[in-house]
Image 1 (tube, rainbow, N blue to C red):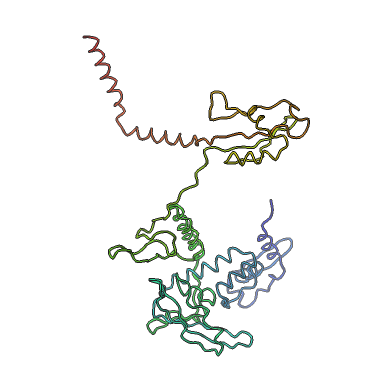
Image 2: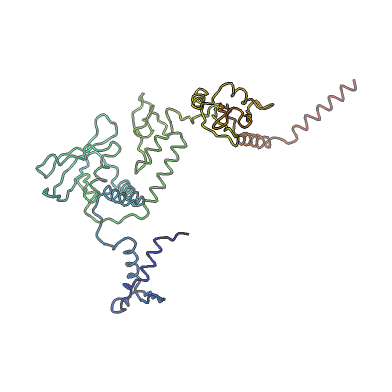
Length: 402
């Protein structure tokens, strides 16, 4: 059984002489851990041991907050082949946005983005106003209203923003720590202020995402399920106004396909599972020594199967009619008779046959249907049939007596 590399790292760390520190001064204030073994003998405090293990597994711990944007964190985790780190960066940022007390963005909000110095470019900022989006009911957009850099080409990248939430791009690409949001003259989000990291946000968001995607799949709307998997939050409603004044707005998910509907669970077009064909055609070959049957392919159309079979030099429609026949008494089944060894060829393939196979229903479905019928019958009076039999017997006696 292969060893866990994490356990190997922990073992090497515990055996490292770096933990052999003198127990003096402030170290006596905390709980002590002592390890004595064949290869090491040390005494350390609990924080010392925790720091040593963290450094060995994840690098030296730092109290400095991560100033990278969520997108940069996810890209770094992706380059390091850490799927968990990538999901944590994106989902944590998404949950932090949607769980903020000021979310969602409102018309009239002011969004200021701060940029750190980069090369010859000094630090600067730009300010966006949140305004209604033309042509999209109930949607907002970012409009650049000012900046502090003389180079206009370096500004306005976050306008107008995604239709779902205009703040998404700025939140994920610049980072929440570089945003300041003002609403009604008050700062509702100060990116420079330290904020505690919510615990377990990745697992919570992942569970909600899976549950909602599963619900969309059960409704038969795979497009909505895919959109939910790609979104960090629940899909907002479409909100398109009804055709008639008395008709409610569309409650389906935004950017859906098909018709609008006030029913959030409406799917257009209705999902239909692909049906199996009624019959398939198998291409089989038999060698000169008749030691086995080789299945060369399975096709829905007979013409396609014949085209595959004609690639063999020994193919002949006459041989198919001679060796492929319906099973006696079983019209839904076929029999492939084997020719004698070397009957049609001394080597290689001597027979190529196209065998039609009817697709039969799953017998388990019939058993489930029968079980459902028996369960339904149990709801009726078990003496119902007996009463009818007794009446029939009495009628026969009366007829015989006459």
